[in-house]
Each structure stands twice: as C-alpha cells, then as structure tokens.
Length: 361
Image (cartoon, rainbow, N blue to C red; front, side, top):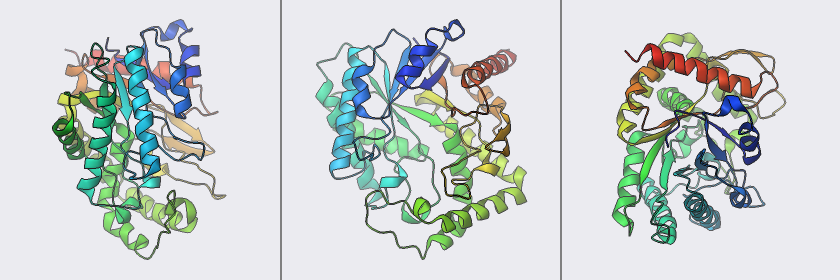
C-alpha cells in the first residue's frame, strides 16, 4: 500500500504515534540510530520504509558505502541486515544514503566511488535473494546535500539526478537478479545544493589554503569555526543581496530535479527551510542550524532567531499531484522545544491535502 503521507521517527516514536487516532492514515519511515535497532523493528503494515542507521559502530562512524575499508564493510553489513529485516517484515522499501561528507574527504576517482556503491548494493541484495523472492525490497537512494567544504574536496557520489542514474545503471550491470532501485528526493538537500553550486568558486577560494589531516572522520567545517563563519558570511551576503534570484534558482533546480527523477520517485522528504538562517554553529561552537529541517510553512523563533520557511511548497505539489499513487510524502523535520512536533505534522498534512484538492481539477 502507498501512503500519501508519512512521518519519520524512531521505533519508539512510531509506536507512540500508532496509538493516536489522528495518525491512523499515516505511514511511517523508521529512522535508526545504529544497526542494533534493526532487530527491534516489527511491522503492522504501516511501516513504509527503513532508513539506514546514522552510525554503524560504537565509535560513531557514520554509515557510508563509499569507504573502501572497515567502515564501508560495516555499513554494507548494516545494509544486508536492513534488507533481511524488511523482507521478513514485508516492508517494501529501504532508504539509503550512499555516503556522507564527514568520511568523504579521501577522494578517489568519482566514477570508481559510484562503482563501489553499486558493488556494495549488489552484494547486499544478492545475499538476501532469492531466499526472499516473494518479497523483493526496493532500494531507495536519497540525494545528499552539497556541503561547502565538499566543493574543494570532491562532492558526494549522489547529489544530482545523473548521479542516481549512474549508480542505478551500474547496479543493473552487476546483480544476479534485477534489483529494484528508486529515488528519494530530499527537498532541503536540493535547495542547499542549488545555491552552493552558484558560489562554488568563491567558497573554493576560502578553502584553498586549508590542508585537511588524514583522520577518517575529519571535517574542516567542524574543526575550524573561523572558516565556517567566513563561508557562512559569504553565503548569507550573497543570498541577502539578491533574495529573489536565489529563491527562484532553487525553485527551478527543484523543478528540474523532480522532472528528471519522477519516473523512479518513491519517497519525497518534506520539510521547511530558511536558507537565510542556515548556520552550522552558534557563537559558542554548538551545533545549531536554526533554519534547517523546519516544519513546512513554519514562521517563528528557533533558538531565539526569527526563521521562516522559504520553500514554495505549492509549486512542486502541482508538479507531483498526478503521481500520488506512486510515491509518499514523508514529513521530516526536527523535534524542537519551540513547537509541538505532532501538531505540526498534522497541520502539514492538512495544508498539503488542501493544496492537492485545490489543484485536482
């Protein structure tokens, strides 16, 4: 069954929501902190997908299929466990990030890295099937956001629609069985990528004299807060100097993204995003992001900062409305003390449903 509206949460959060009648028509995406939680998943028919674990070991290394060493192997093992559990519990999909920025600085050839991702997906899938041939799980590849420091170190292997098709093609060329591969579009990731591409040269100049060490989890934007501030000041200066231009650029890039991937779209991650308050850290160096992963249509204060969702949700809903039986909207925004997460989720569904009804004629 395809649920039009879903929400993403931990196993515990989903169990709570399943007891609330207002969420009776919601499906769920299970978000895992680590692989030990996979065995705790039990499906009653409303879990639409399992999202890959955030970390894969006790040292908190992030899930990545791009690493050529032990972390990549451990991530591949977690993917096999996800597929096995999904097949056992009759869960149709798993969501996979091919890689993430923090472990992505030791860049090899871009095509080689995409090939490695395809190999790990193929091995994982072939280890499960044909034992579970009656329940083939679809692997849904989620687009990563382009991050500022990746512009100098080499971007993620799955940022653009073409990246998706490259990996999908390589998977098809390797597998013993025809592996179902579909796409996840994360709207905030698309928006952030759209304007970082425009500022690539200027950001590259700031980062050109930075020499990353060789620690596997090195992230220059976490270890050098002065560089973070310099880059974010540059981004904000440009965005604020021509707000309409950058918002239109993001809208058009999203239109292109949807058009390119619509035939293979399985999940659309929805949230609000204020690119004018997209700050990594506060003045004390604490992880912040006041403008990121907001409830759709949100306007108010987050951590004492005025934020407003800048995404034009009406426009992309119009583009998607004819295909609602083929994919799910998954509301994916942070829990914060400034708002009630359950209320905002229900409010988002209500507004989205009204927009869909208005544009159904």
